[in-house]
Amino acid sequence: MQRMTIKVLPLFIAICALKVGAATIGFFLHSVYLWGLAIPLFLMAIYIAVGLKYREPVISAEKFADSCYYLGFIFTIASIIFNLFDLPNIGDDLYSIAVRFGAAMVSTVMGLFVRICLVSFRPSMEDAMRTMEDQVVDASQRLAESYNKAFDDLEHFRGEVANAARETVRTVSLEIQSLTEQNAKRMDEFFLSVSAQHTEAMATVIQDTKTNTEELKAAVREYTAASVASVSKIDASVDNFREMVISRLEAVDFPEDLFTRKLGAAIEALNGSTEALTSGVSSISGEVLEAAKLVERSITKVNKKTESMTQTLDVAQQVSAQQGELLEAIREQNSGVLSVIQDQRTQLTLALVQHRESSVEGMVKQTVALAELASVFKRVDSSVEQVADQLSVAREQTVKVLYGIERVDQQNTAQGQAVKRNLDSLEAAITIAAEHASSITSALQHSNEAQGTNHAKVVQTLDEMGKTLVSHSELLRATSSHSPVSANPLDTGANPIDLQQESNDLSASSPATNEPSSTKSAWFKR
Image (cartoon, rainbow, N blue to C red; front, side, top):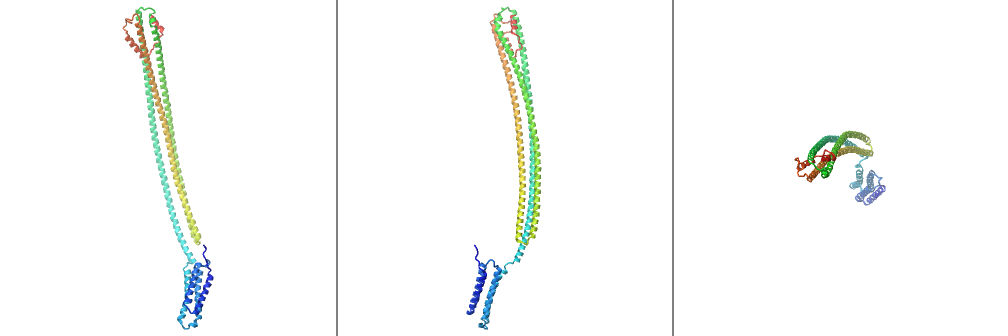
């Protein structure tokens, strides 16, 4: 809202006219205090109040104060003039003259008072400039002190940042070194334990294989010796029986077709049983050979597993080489991080030097440009902005340093994950080796089971042979009981119990003679 203004010149003329009118009325009415003092002072008060509040903006306070002083002086002169006009009527009354002149001088005093209040106590341009210069000098001194304090704080902050960076780098280096040493120590211990375990496992497997092989060889030798002994015993028994039968037959005269009729079926059965016994022994020998081949294949598998364990150890050595390369990479990354931090520290030092130079240049410029207040404040603002920019740059550098430290932590975390992955791969290799060892153990178990199966088959075959011989002996006894000389068969002390014993002996061995049945028939005929 626009303020209402009144022109001072018309107001000044109107007040002067009213003063002259009041003085004229007072001259005719001889009223000194009302028309000569009160009303003029009231008119001056109206002029001062209206002028102070509603004067034009182009009228300065100094000009308005001068107009008030001049208005009071005009009032005084006008009063003196009318008093001089009225001097003949006053005569020699000095009291009345003094009162009239005193009332006339009051307006001048009032105008002078207003002028002093509006002008004398108002600061001049020179005083204002001098005051502003003093304030600017004080402000520049305070600004220099602030700059020095800010520079000291920045130096202190830079030192703290450098110390923190060095401490962080040292801590990270120590942690990485300790972690590397711990990992190397654990890897060495792990590989030593794995090597020892694998060596013990391989020695145990080889020893078990050797033991099983020796046991199998001993069993084969026992089977061979037992078979040879059984065959020899069977041969001896058959020879004895043949000789005894021949001697008995020579002592007894039988019909020519007696044995042919009575023993033909038994001889044929005995011949078939002998052939079955021979085939059984052959099958047992083949099974023994197959068992030996199975043992040989088991030994071949053990050798293959040993080669796979050697390959596993080679893989472990490769993992150790990879761990060494990983340690070298960690050392290279540490050196790179140290170089990056050194570069950042150099950049921070250069930024601080530039900040110091720019601050000194700004202070010189501000000292030279103290004449113009507006430019001084602008340059002060620009210097403050430069300080803020430099502080922001220093803050950004600090953030970069912290980011570099975080990146080092991330790299250390990635390296720890890589070490963990390598350990996982090593555990997988060890698991594969354990599976190989379990497969070797299962193969040995299968070999032992096969050996047990072969042993059971041999025992079963021998049992069948024994049963066959028992049946043959019973058949011979039955045949002899139906013969004409059955009262004392073959009086040579060989009773049926002895024949049963011989047949039982034959059941514990395998036949070694394979003479044709025609020869035996010829013996019986003789």
